[in-house]
Image 1: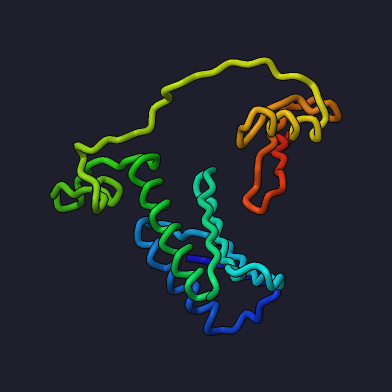
Image 2: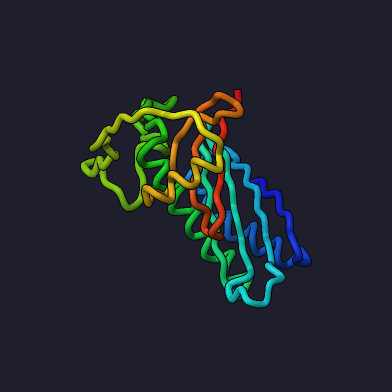
Length: 188
């Protein structure tokens, strides 16, 4: 696994980097090609934040993004938690969405299973693919992003889609964990 580690307000010691890479290496066993991961280790300088040491991992995989973030009072504990979360997400991705291989014959004529045919913890009978259980249609109204924030709060939703009156594109506004708002804009 190729891991790029960056840090904010933290001294990136070789021991810390090695610990992170070793923990993420467990996730590589699920795939036969090299995964490329980006890690961001952050320490918040605000003394009122109890869980101020955050580890964030992002892996791009066949057009999908696998991302995990965990915060604790100890950077090593944050790395442990986020590595476990990433491994669960990669296992879930592989079992549900990754194209399953087929049985093939090797040069000796013996039938062998592709690595992707079998996954620990899930039998072939357990085909639990998510389903769309509800569909909703609504009218998108042009408005500035600030107005969309107000509308989202009035509705009590976690996100709100609207046509941005400044760009004339469909945007989504959402609540962030830190209490602020996020804006998703399409890249064309």
